[in-house]
Image (tube, rainbow over all chains, first blue to last red; front, side):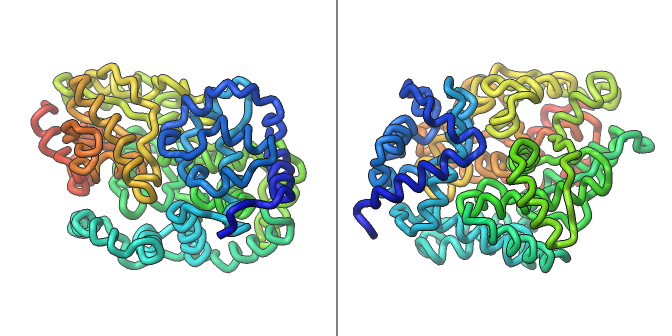
Length: 188
Length: 296
């Protein structure tokens, strides 16, 4: 793992954030901290949302990307609806997550592993298959933790709630063609 | 008692509500039938991308949603969904495609590569919105044939029903579900946690954080004297129902409380059978609670 992220990467990220719908609003941040105060998982973040924006604009992105922070965002959109400057901060967090998965600088494995396993499962079936997703996730993070989930899995199984045979959509081939076409237009 | 459908919607049930959380889909279809709403399942729908494809590829995620919108557009009807995450992601794709000409062109080109297209004409609607705003007070009350007045309900809308899109309901203090539950004749308790986060995927990726978030919701519901928590999203539902003993340890308070979908509560007010509402799927004693509190 890299200990620091090159300044060019900070620059690249800022450009990518500006390119998001309403992403340029980040220039209007007044550092009021409403985002941090609204965030349900801020207590578990090394850097709060307000600090992330400050780091982003100061080109000190390495601090953020080498922390557990971005994967703690639960997509509740509280910061987004409350921000007085109209910054779509949840979308900015998605962009940071994408940067981490693209550049492989991610430190906190769980959130990234979950997202990758999810995208793979959807690519394979056209739908999410929860049983398969969780199997992938626990095998790649901590298989022992899966043991802790066994009582719940058993309860779900007994109620017939576990999807034993994954469903695959008929149009999967067409979905793959669509995916290939959009991939040609950049990484976002 | 089954009416001829007067309103038809294309229906996107989503992955979660047709697998682990199928009770939501089953109960939604059955209450819709009673209300004369036809939920016509979208042909060969795919995953909307949820909040979990976005951290990998944004545009691919938008394409996934746009394919569903394209199928719905061919059917020429509003697209109904029951999952808060599907609702937000489908709406977001719709909005960003409408606002950003370049993004729209790219996504349409991708859709065409797979033999589809989307012109942006579909409205994405949450089933709760349809019940409250398209049907309203009279038609819903008209189907109530059970007495729910002994039942105290904490209405939990979750995050994404009113965030980031705040045109459907208040993003801080949502009212829509409270209104509906009032029509059903149950007692609505004052519940300040109605739009707080249940922990979402953090319940799996960072259980310590997830348990505290779910715990605060369950604890406050109990403190306010609620008999049950009612949800509108499959992920909220499983987070709140499946981990109550671990959650109790995390917040140092008893968190045992039945959790059910608003569609299951509607169905019990309409006198539907436990089977029609898939109550046996519940991980909390929903069946027992309804047997005690709902009178014919």
